[in-house]
Image (cartoon, rainbow, N blue to C red):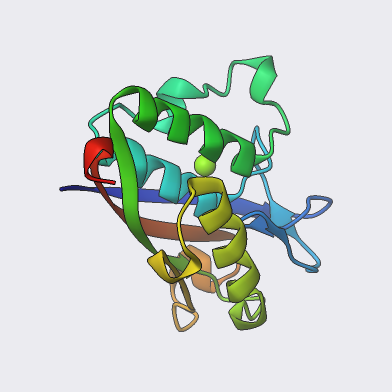
Amino acid sequence: MRSGIGFDTHRLVAHRKLILGGVEIPHEVGLLGHSDADVLTHAIMDALLGAVAAGDIGQHFPDSDARWEGADSVFLLREVMAILRRRGWRPVNVDATVLAERPKLMPYLPEMRCRLAHAMGLAVEAVSVKATTVEGLGAIGRREGISAMAVATVCPEADA
Ligand code: MG
């Protein structure tokens, strides 16, 4: 077994959708980024890539590449799954935390888990998504952005 860690932050701005874990969440601001800026899915992708020492999402899906402009991050997560498969690994479980002052994410967590689990070929029970505020502290507390962190465990495909 191997494990990897992922962390990401995106800025909150007007006139952008808020997409977390592949789920569009009604909110007055959304995350800014080259892709759909789904910070949760990005942290999970980096955790998976980290577990197999396959670089990071910036390397595989560079901002400079027009192909990834406005990209659906769940689609990119499927691409990461292909990288894992080619190297002979499969995910075992993922645990993630979203750091956001607003909106309240609790109602959306089950749907995020479903979408992410489906993209990774995992049971929903193997995908944990949690949310916390930062008690109003710092940039996240001022609602200037949202961060996410994730840990992923993988095992050799042959052990499936
Ligand atoms: Mg990102």
